[in-house]
Image (cartoon, rainbow, N blue to C red):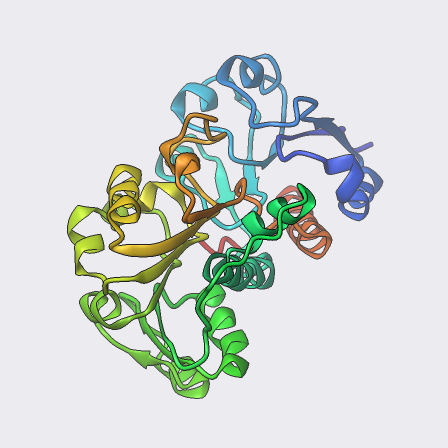
Length: 319
């Protein structure tokens, strides 16, 4: 008889939104231990649970050597998403722990919200919604997207989907990427340029870079200064990419017309974050990937990666 494999799921809402994946794991003899907190788990909470787990479906909790030392049976961390900046991947390898993620599985959801946030910022949709519900008949003169130059910092799968969806808006799209997919750029009629040109020439800048040591505070005082006066800025990538003080300064000074932000330097974000005191910001709580379709696709991908590992099949890493 096969021994029961214990899987700790720190991603939230697993039973509610990932029923197929949970059933798949359980039908293969796995015991699921779920995150009951509705938020990322703390070190102390992980400490109490990782001692005998064989695998983890990881949310955005911190996974590092301090945790690995407490998990002698842990064989694989299957990240419920794309970004692995919360996981010390190199240290995991030293402990013999594989790390996988789910590249591309949330791309459409993030791309759709990126465009939704941009339109919301250009037309002040959230504030008009609130004002109308309060009985005010406010009028707001916004900007149209047609004819604009949209620049993307990063040209991965999400950015490519954003570019495809922008086709119908009759805009000119340019992108910067360290390792650009030139064939996809050709197909989507996207001009590959330097980061400086994206900043200097774009009416809209969408930040879609990965969060790495080299991209920390990629957007800072100097890079915001390079942007066109009156431009719009959208970040649906990672909060660590942006110096929030520099962003606030650019918004207060009028250098930027508005910004739309889904991610923050510190999450969950504090109510006293200065961005929330600015009228020319649209903010959401790191929710770009939160769709039923994404939960299904990512949960099944992570479950199959774990089962592959248990069966001795090398799971796709995708990092």
